[in-house]
Length: 264
Image (cartoon, rainbow, N blue to C red):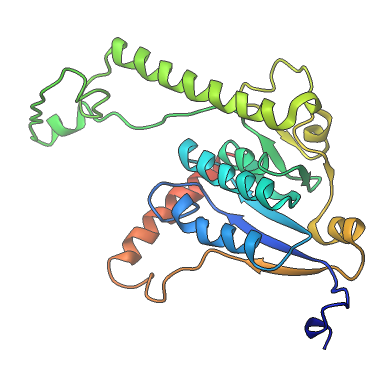
């Protein structure tokens, strides 16, 4: 009956958004188009006392990381709702970018955070195609269109250009972390080198605010009667049928490789 009587105060609740997996630009993991309705609903449905982010993410696309985090901050400021991040196994690289969208970040004693850097990785197959009798034919209009072709030897000029792009992205990442964490950050010269930190060490460096888990921290802040409403990214009913099976298998391998970088 309480919900139908306007002068009776309802118990506070926390909207929980789960951010599990690698950040991608292909719809096979965490991305802005897929998470947009989830995030919007968490902030706009009812009047949550707070929004909590459950994060288990090894990183991924810088652009998607920025778009997702920006959406969270925009809605938090618009609705004046505090945001808390709770890191599980890992919030590294783009995963830490997402965590920085929160006003406060909490970790498990074994959680991995940091990895504030940018990486570009691939393979070279310059000799392989020749050994199996395949001739590579590439025709371009524009000298940079075949830059970093994996079937051609690397060119020093192309590598230099790629490193310049990575440095620009890295600078943007660093500026974002500084804007969100401010004076909480330590003066450790290794903080922005891609180094990772475990549990309390992340607290000591100012990357996170404390050791704590979602339910007890939220009860401490909002009382023992606080409740939780979960908002998860939905997959279509037939998402795992047909050609999508192969697509999901590839995505699973890529995600496992991303987690494996942190021994997970």
